[in-house]
Image 1 (cartoon, rainbow, N blue to C red):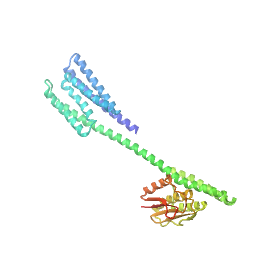
Image 2 (spheres, rainbow, N blue to C red):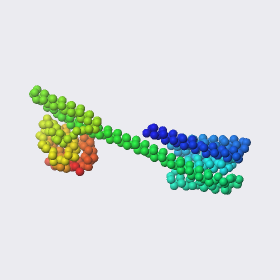
Image 3 (tube, rainbow, N blue to C red):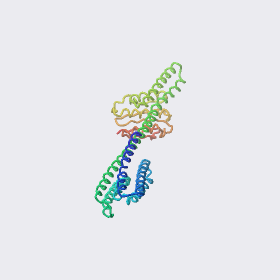
Image 4 (cartoon, rainbow, N blue to C red):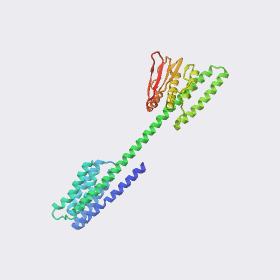
Length: 354
């Protein structure tokens, strides 16, 4: 995008240099009507007008609009001072001043400014004695043509700038969304795995050596799976299935000493909803083990809903990143998530799919 901005600036500079042909053409009028000191003054005025125009372009690139309008005013005053020395030749400078003013106002105002400039080129030679009226239409056409060129370029440059800003904003939002996705996935994936590792490690301490060895082998497998999950989260490919999460949830609840009342099959759930429901089961079971101090955990499945319910006495998990991330998934899928205490005690996490 910096390269595109540089291209626009070079094009603007090239157009600015091309506009300096008009002060050069005005010099013909100074040569024709001025003599001696007047000739020198006329040339100096043309140099000053050219310098003001270049400064005006720099002010435009830097968005120094107050300076910009002061320079337009100074150019206009210098052109008026040049009029007695160049006669009708000074009118060609309107092709510089009028488009410069029209480029920084609204469309209707710009049309009015250009029309007034063109009319001035036609009328002034008629009312000023000694001025040649033969080229007045030439000056008017030059004003209109140059104004259209400058306005078209200005609108294109503005559109390009807005496009660059929009692209930068899209890139920023995409980067932010990706960071949020990775944070959410890492929480959901590692939260479950680390909870299982913690529970199984605590369980292994209470068992005999053979049983403890089996639990630690399971811990090793969970650690490897956690590493694989981290890589999947970073790359954006998570393999989460409802059947897999039910099996993992049953094992986690067993290790935590919580009775698991989980379905043995998930065929009732349509394939398009199984991944989402898998995330719900993962988050719900993890929160039961972490927060609920429950004796039983129940998972109920229908074709359009999933509910994870416990009989615990602990407080709610709260609106942490886990539930926030899950709610974002559910909302993106068009579903509704509700979480809160049940009438019989305990806690319920329920998702209704669209």
